[in-house]
Image (tube, rainbow, N blue to C red; front, top):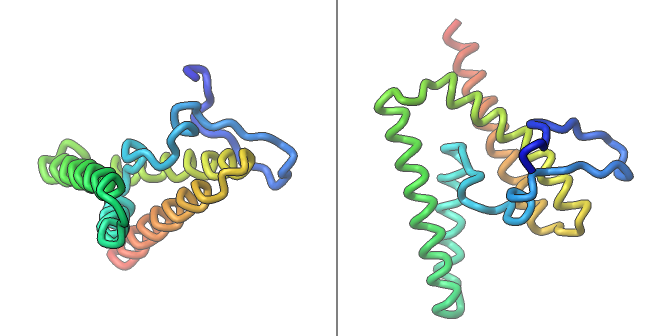
Length: 143
C-alpha cells in the first residue's frame, strides 16, 4: 500500500468505495494509530474501565498489554513535547493529518460492515476535533 494517497476525500455517496491503507484497515484500533494526547488519555481510561469488568484472565491480560502500550505512547508523546523535539504546531499538524486519515478509515470500516470499529474510530475523530477546537479557542483568546 505504498502508493496509497495520503488523504482521500470522503464523498457523500455511499456507493463510492474509499480506500484506507491496508495496515490501518487490518487493525483500525491499533495503538500506533493514536497520536493525540486526548485520545490516548481517553483510551487509557476506557481500557482501565474495561479491565475492571473483564470476565477472564485472557481478556485482562490483553487489556493490561493495551494499557501498557497506551501509557508508553502517551509518555513518549509527552517527552517529545517537553524536550522540544515536537513543537505544538507540529503536534497539531500530526493530529490534523490523523483526523483526516481516520475519517477515511471510519468510512472504509463501515463499507466493510465493521460498524463497531467504525464507531470507535469516529469517537477518536470527535476527541481529536474537540482537542483542535480547544487549542484554536485558546489561540483566539490570546490574540
